[in-house]
Amino acid sequence: PGIWNVTYTLSGSCQAQFTQTVQISATDSSTIFSYYPDHHCQSDPDAIPFVLGDSLGSFVAGGGIVFSNTDLGQLDLSAMQPGGPYIVYYDIDNRCAIDVQDSVWIDLPDDAAFGYPQASYCAGEVNALPDLVSFPGGVFTEVTGSVVFADSGTGEIDLVQSVAGGPYFISYTTAGPCPETSTQQVTILPKPLAASLIVSPDTSYCTGQSLMLQATAGGAIDWRWWLNGSLQAFTDDMLMLDAELTGLDSVAVAMVNAQGCSDSLSVVLRGLAAPRLTTAVLRAETNALGLSTVELQVATDIAGTLVEWEADGSNLRDIGPDAGSFAAFGPGSPVGLSISAGFVAPFELGRLRVVLVPRNAACAGFADTVVVALSPDTMRVFVPEVFTPDGNGKNDTWMITWLGGVDPGDFTMQLFNEAGGKVHEMDGLRQDFDGGSLPDGVYWWVLRDMQGRDLQAGGLTIRRK
Image 1: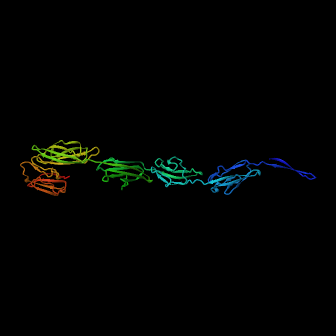
Image 2 (image 1 turned 60 degrees about the vertical axis):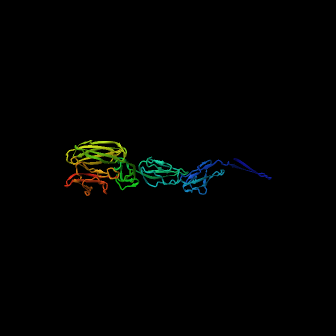
Image 3 (image 1 turned 135 degrees about the vertical axis):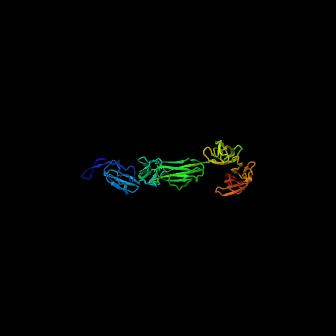
């Protein structure tokens, strides 16, 4: 490169010379330009190339190239079709320079579309998960921090930890080569507040008791009850249970507010067996001094039964003992009780009433009441209040007894059912009545003399089992 004089000399007889100055410029081999990076997203700002070296020139578009500014080489990315490579040429005005080129690719923006199946959810429900994420692998965010994500990569919303309110703006930003962000609104509705379930008297109850369940929650307007998985026909805040109980039951209640959101609670109910008593009168007699003695036998159906008892009566005095208790006993070991009493009016019937209340460690059982009619010695006839015609050879007949000197043929005995109908009659006292075809139960008897005057009356229990 440089300025040179070129001389041309004629070789003829008339020599002559011609000289011309020539400038030789150096080739510009250092000019470069680049649209770095070579991949551009269609949604990016228009790309302008970086030029190093000779900057006097113009940009020439290859196929598919669209310029928004030709002088700067600025590409209109939004107008170009995705794909590549696209070639851009830089035509340098210095004619000694070598024109250069660069390649670009246009990439589509990531599809950031996503969606939750519902626009609103109830707080405390099962976590909410998008049913659409077009370009997985990105990150979900919510600017206030009220929405807590169980997994920010999947968009799973923790509806227990999140704060009720909204609408909240949930954004999803892709992590692909051309990241994009989209937003959806989600509202978290409040559930009923401070839900509680109270069982009265307790979740452990004694068999035969009625239970009341009451559910409360702030804002609740509807209650739905399930017993052992079956929906009950109750829509208020209380549920009464009695005959429906099996002894081991599950109860669940859902409390629903005006927004349709619910909170649910459940409880297991356990029934405890309450002891029952069977009380038999073994002996009831009056001696010549007018002192009556009653002997009872008390049996139970549950081991560990405790019994408290009280005794009172009519036309009786000096009842002793008139109260007491039995230590724990079981089905195989009945206990005995002996009570004595005198008569207030010596020529009238007396009635002794004994009330026995069983209980075990957890439950009070059903009281058993025994009433025994007592005759003064002057009447000289004893009528048992119970007999058991079960064929075991013990107490199988109605063993009416009388003292010496009493003629049993001087009396009649009539037996009546609870409705007042006469079911049996004796002309003269006997001890062979085995109950016949009468069903087990309680009957009433009247002892009369041959003139039809009432002498004694009382109750009779026929018990085969």
